[in-house]
Image (tube, rainbow, N blue to C red):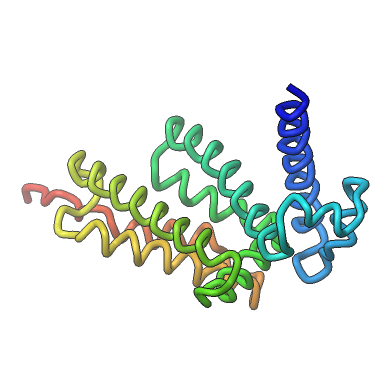
Length: 199
């Protein structure tokens, strides 16, 4: 029984660390969010903090995983209230409010292209999962007639995700780039042309 209690406390501490890390990185940026600063935020030593994650890279991958969970939960609510495209646009738009997390995502995803990187598996799985989700949703929208029927859903999903990632890089270089507006323009390209009207 004591073992289960220790496990539960460990899970709770991990969640506390991730919540604090999300706040610190969002406010101060990835470059200034040291393991020491994150450990201080939750009252642990650096070694104590890394005990829960194994390495700095795994900690940061867990931070991004947590951000994805929160974004996905919010996106589901927004999609039910509006539309899939609007939910996607809102997620990208909100990213402008958390530049530190975008910086973390861009840097860590580039580093994780190395198969030996501790976060490689996370990013590979994340990419596959998102691509499959977006492709499935595009096929659903095609069946409803709100997305062009001539699009290959898997290819379009890959391009949508690539465009979103690229916009984030451009926005980090030039914050005047309106990510949400560019995503909205890109999504409009997927809509079927208006039906011809009788002259």
